[in-house]
Length: 173
Image 1 (cartoon, rainbow, N blue to C red):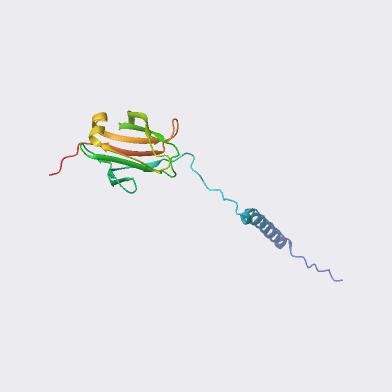
Image 2: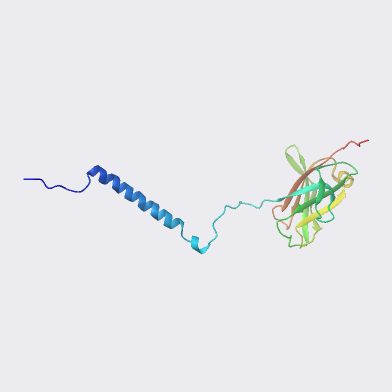
């Protein structure tokens, strides 16, 4: 009497085929789930910083007549030098005044050179810029390293930040 022959694969092969089918099912589900909403042009999530990052205040010897921004860039100023500074905001300020603060950087800490004071600005412009004489700043604050901060409202984080030095600069000649 002949034994009936089974056309089923041996147990070890069935085990591998089962794992292969399970893996294919997981991949299919992952593919379908990952594509959900892609045909509707939903915005994809993008990482965003936890806080507002201030723009940089740049310092120079003058303000450009066309752009209004500081040119002939430098961060070291001596008595008699023109002192120009500007910040290019990401959008128009939207307010007609800002607070301007200057702190003296010393020994790893800071001390107030100029407490936040209100300054008039153009609410429709992305550029905030001013020009003064470095001699006036040296007379008010003395020589040293400083950080300037611009705020578009009281109690807010700085909108713009930049560092500069008031120093004895030897006269050339």
